Image (tube, rainbow, N blue to C red; front, side, top):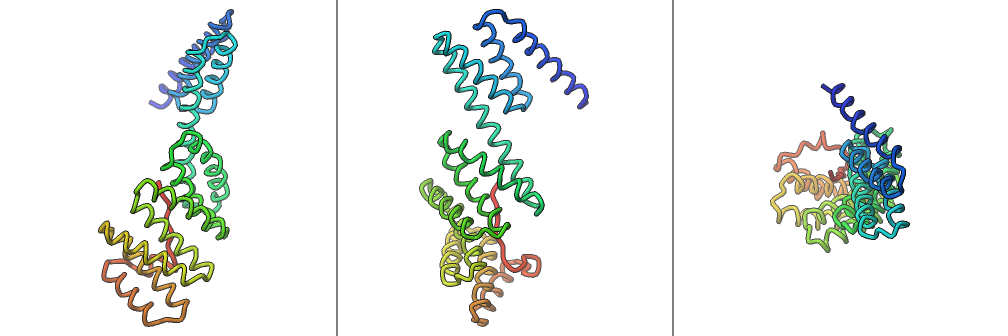
Length: 250
């Protein structure tokens, strides 16, 4: 079945490329490039599609055809955005493999400006949140804090309370690693309260587990045991959770 799909894709694109090659007039070439761009996009070849849309737009602009030029620019922008979303998903798929984290970091840094230009604040915030996860995993804790603060600010402006809580939780974990226990406790308590308000029991339990770690490192064994007991009551397996828990967003 896959071979049939590949053959159909190859035939479709070959026909579009032949159309471009046979175009004698600039306007025909521009129209051919635009149709090729649409075909490439349909087959998931976003980078090449965007380049052809841009080329078509430049030809139309030189010919003074403002409306087709604008349509090609929109096609280019939409295609680059589609590529950015696909690349972001690819980066998320890499996060479970420590050897792939540098690649994920570069991909996330590459796609964020596309989301910024497209003025999609939710995507910008999600990208920053995931960048923080990678940076923390790579030991770049100050950079992780900066990314989480940016993500939290954007999520707050969008009224995304549970995402704000996620940022607070991860900030608490990073600050714990940095030995900034008072700040870590503040962030984790804020996250816990927001998750509790949203009835997110599992995340409340994770906050309790991380608060237990903060107090244990701070030398307060009694309060550490209290939070560990709260986490267990909510069904969290502390042994499986590990010493601290951050999350990423899909």
